[in-house]
Amino acid sequence: MSVNFDGSLSSSFSHADITDARCSRAVSWSVLCFFRVENTAGDDRSLFTKWGSGVNKRQARFKVDAGTAPQNIQIDFQNTAVTINGGNNVELNTWYLFCVTADGADTVTLNLVGMDGTFLDSNVTGTTTVDSTDMSEDLRIGTRNSGADPMFGDIAYAAYLKREILQPEILEYLRNPAKVVHKVGGSTGPVFFLPMVDPTASTTPDWSGQGNPFTKNGSGHTDGDNPPVSMLYRDAEEWQGNFAAAAPSVFLRDPIMSPGIIPFAR
Image 1: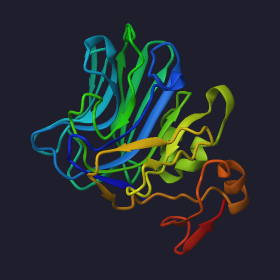
Image 2: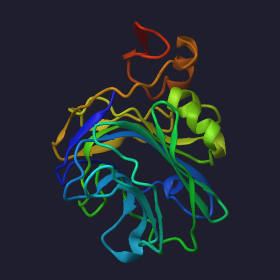
Image 3: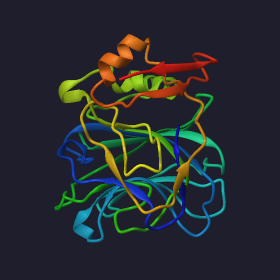
């Protein structure tokens, strides 16, 4: 499952400001998603942003740089007061897992992982010094909030967690995102978990159980390729218990854990 973005400036998924998902330096958090870029000519390709048009609203943006591939993963904070760059490891038409995590004590860490589990950018760190003065901007997947830097390619299984995760757990997310999302709850649990399904619908559902679906903007979305990850959450009973309030009835192909079709019902 994934959503394909066609590079249109208006094509994105957004949610109004969520207090627990502000990428603040004062708390621990992690943002993860799978992505596959088809084109990096002309524009940066946004993955996840909380980045307004006013300089006092530019809290965080995570993107692939424009230019000739292989290209660079870049994360910016506080109107580019802090910029962390990867190492030009993003090839076109290739799936990757992207993770940015914060320790709640000023340090932000970037990891880029190949689908074979290789850390292409490994624990690249930067130090934040201040948050934006206005944290009210929308969260957005596929563009930055001013409508620039449109994604051209696929995004799948985007999550925001209220805790820092380290490389062993990042690898666990690579193999089974749902298991990591629901490993803990409460004050260190998930804020949202977006499988990125059904690009024709007006929203993409939130499978975290927190009730934070994202609204579709524009029309440049189609079904994307399936990243080679497992969505088997131990067993069907455990899946139903954790996702009953949030997940629709779906049939998920599990390429790693099972060669067949695994039904999960509400």
